[in-house]
Length: 315
Image 1: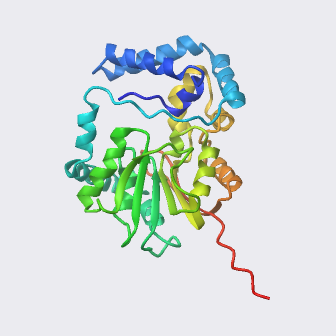
Image 2 (image 1 turned 90 degrees about the vertical axis):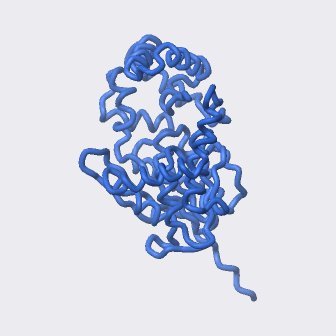
Image 3 (image 1 turned 30 degrees about the horizontal axis):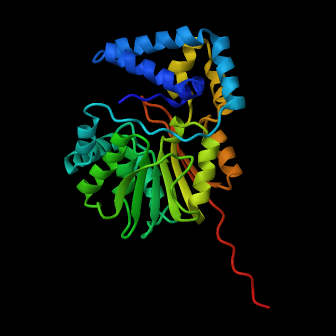
């Protein structure tokens, strides 16, 4: 299954369909040879964008004219339906959980603490009967951390726009015996299918790193959270760690990265996230940074909506 990254969506926002088609054609041509496929994609970017000036012009164009639009869900290709069904099995869930447990003892040193923060009422004490929404199932690593630490009566809905990833949540649910309290759901983050003030917690494990229009997502999160509800997110401290391969070929330096991403309303570092969250009515309660050896630095941040105002006294 092929899809474009968030920065590619920005650079090609006026021709996303055509760009996705090019990637499909290159995948068919170099299928099974990931190195040749990546080189062909990079060559296409160089051919179309051309130069540093071309890159900056596209960022400026998106800054002025890009917007939140309805995200098209990724179409299933041949063989994907069967793979999606496999992903929803307990066997796949077992494999995903084992993978998550393994990386939690290695480079993903933040993973257990992230799940604990999602499932606690105050960052320390676990809470029951929470309605939890996850943005971005992905490979299910964050999903495992949240689900495996859920309190009694809590429920988890894990969302993604990739149907294969969504089914990872179902597989994890079956393996953990949580199929009656946990499910995957297709959704886009800019228009969440939940009522105002209906959720206790929203969590995301690297999904904001890989999204466009982050301020709009944070506004949606604020809308669906109850008074005093929490947003818990994991994100790269340095977005250059993800965007370097797209920026460096056009002469973009590391120190230029965050400012350009900010103009495109993409993840531009923890400070940018905090500022946009504040604009959405979310207050930063806690931030814990992790710098594991041999891997990128990341942060776990906890935000909250304002608590409910006490009723006015009777006169």
